[in-house]
Length: 159
Image 1 (cartoon, rainbow, N blue to C red):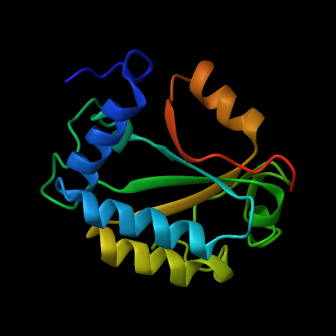
Image 2 (spheres, rainbow, N blue to C red; image 1 turned 120 degrees about the horizontal axis):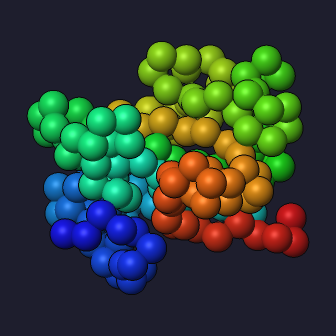
């Protein structure tokens, strides 16, 4: 299995995400995507980042779920101005551009989205973290920092 996400087709990346993140269960992946899109502000884009996309942890190169089944998280990046309004003012790394993660460690930084995150976590059977950003920050993390992503839902540029 290639770790070079840029060399993979979209279909290959989706297969990897379903295999790693959802135990090969296409229906659970589809339900996850449907619930995610329905629970977000209209026009919000959604990208997956991290080890579910690359198959290895960025920090140490360990394989996805190296600490046991269901231990690796799903890093969900949300793109759009409307979704950023769900975060508390003090929960931004870069004001109006890049938020802190909404996770079990900090479930209050974006209260309007925490119930959705918890429901997705139960559906996936593993931790799910949300972070909101803009397209430029997502691009910089990919190109300059070597943190690739996969777009699940394209943002609506008209909103």
